[in-house]
Image 1: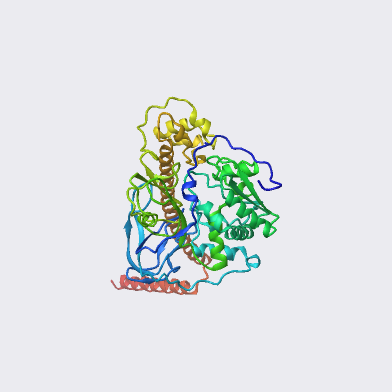
Image 2: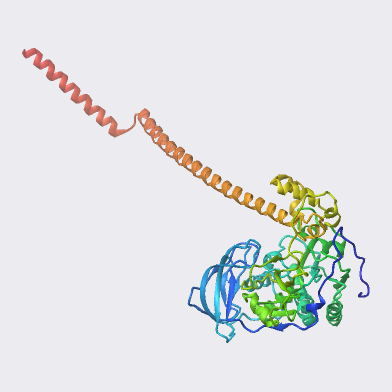
Length: 521
């Protein structure tokens, strides 16, 4: 443990489970052979989907912008290699819903030729933070720890004070080692990225939180910090415990500060970023390269040579398996993500996305199929292990009954879906599935309410506009009438006077003629 380390705190609950990291962390990162076909979903981030900027038949170069962010909370998408756009359509993707999504397909040409990239920002310390955020936005960088929130948006702390930047190096979920290998092999990129992020958010200090089961990564990062005399950086080694990498859990571990329920780390002056995100930030700012590749852990007894691969975004999972020597006889299940928070994939033709950090090819006994659920026995084990200090069994009952108001009363959205509750449940209830269902239903209801409110506001605005125009028309007519009446009452209109005099003369002449006729008769 580094000298001078401050005290650590401990969050409620959590699990001590076999990490299964040695299988994939032992060998260096390998660069995968360029696949013939890359499938790129237009939504690989939280927020609105990107909008295509290419059409079928277009030639593209590596790093070329092929889909642009369609909203503030959105992310650009770049070509991971040179080739030809062969398809833009809804295709299957790696997602728990199993639903297809709009994708751009590139048939690679094998040349891997780069497009012209923007100039590096070498002296980033003199750069305006807004310009650096714009570079991150251009590069399409999102959180690579799993959250996939656009980094340019997360680092926009205008009007907020950031006291502490936390670099999340915990990588707490079993099997996943891509961040571990990154820190061992590219510690300088991680530290450079952390320095850039610190400059963008104007944080006074930087804390790097890492679990104690990564001694090589700890040594590599500490050497960089010492070599560059970064006194405002502190490497904090925390005990291995799942889910220490949860954002709120890591904040409490390192600082003793609790993020309020329903709040954000920014509310307490803290911003968190993943180590892989930091390294990608350095690549975008110091080298002018967008996010087109990522490191992926491929592991499990079902694959011949577990390890970590540097993979172009859009690569089919099958190409990773081929690179790792193919399937073994034990291969039974394919999981995207870790065993706690990941989900099963139906086949290996689905593409790697920006948020894909791990694929597990599980053996038959390694990751068994879920067992049938039985009735809750109210044992309270789920409460004991919940790191968010929730009441999982009550959330389950309310979600199952579709009583979504009460699920929110029980702080449903503080649930980080870590899976601790389901892991210890003796009734084998898939608790997290119920929480995800409730969240999805609440979000859908909120979207419908917003759409309804928007339609109501449009109708009210239209009716108000019609009433205003009618009132304006009536007011104009009243003014004209009042003006005419005023002129008439004043009696000083020459034309009216002439007309009245002429009418009198005509009337007098007619009267005289009538008298004359009466005398003659």
